[in-house]
Amino acid sequence: MTSRAPLRIGIAGLGRLGWRHAENIAYSIRDARLVCACSPVRTELEAASSRLGVERTTTSFEEMIQSPDIDAVVLVTPTSLHAEQTIAALEAGKHVFVEKPLALDVADCERVQAVAARHPGLVAMVGFVRRFDPSYREAHDRLQRGAIGKPFFVRSQTCDLNDPSGFFVQYAAHSGGLFMDCSVHDIDLARWMLGNPRAERVYATGTIAMHPGLAKHQDVDNGFALVDFEGGGRAAFYASRTFAHGHETQTEVIGTAGKLLVGHGAARDRLVTSDAQGTHHASVADFFERFENAFLQEMTAFVSACRGETALELTLADATEASRIGQAITRSLRSGQVERVLQP
Image (cartoon, rainbow, N blue to C red):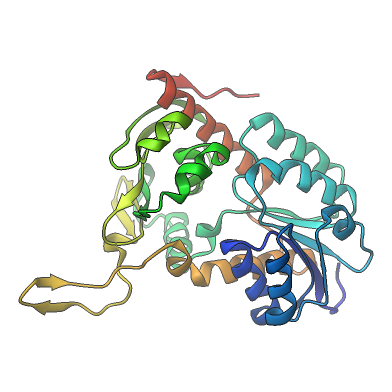
């Protein structure tokens, strides 16, 4: 699409993250219009109409993607639906943005890739939002310039503020587990920072520190994984659902001539307070707050690509590899053994 007309977008899924994407499209992206919202939850559709001014709402995904006045769809639906909905939208001639992971099963990721290859004029993008965060982009740009020599080790973590309600315990039945839900971001970052190598072997372990209900899902609330990449690159991942102080995303890249560190300390701002309780700073509460700007930049990049203005660096193949590695890590967590990363 190369005209200057705004990209007409329909969104499926208006939960926590879906609502934020909808707000960005409706209010903050100049070249896009949110024209349709799809959800099985009536109150979400009513909110889309009254608060976002969405022209049309529907409970039917098929009705939305078959609409001739929609150019692109944004999928913020349960992971189990991602592959089939992405394929259906592409076959209906729509550009697609789908939240991570593309699918929990590598075969489903590959099916999506095959369909996308039959529609080269359509954009298909997976939401690895950290690639659009200014700090991570600067780190990647410095690596490209050789600022720390050859990078060979990445240590990355995704650690959430503890939720006493245990919402994610029930969510674990559908999320694919801690590593597929949280560490998939770190997996993608590690490949990106190391030059997109293939993974060869993984080992994972974990513990249930606070939420015993995860046991029935063969999941943990704190997990640790090691990955060996071809060419000598290595990565270590830590994921947690139980942090006391806030959300802490952090990544360290070590190279032959130095290192880079992104996100240390989970600081909300640059204000440090010293008082009778010690020296401290406020922490970001969740990943929405930490990556608020990145979510906007991510959706802006999608719209720009759909309009034919820029090309996407992030590919479906990247998403497939992240799922391939995440799946192997989850197998290792459950087997207690080193697992090989199965290649096509």
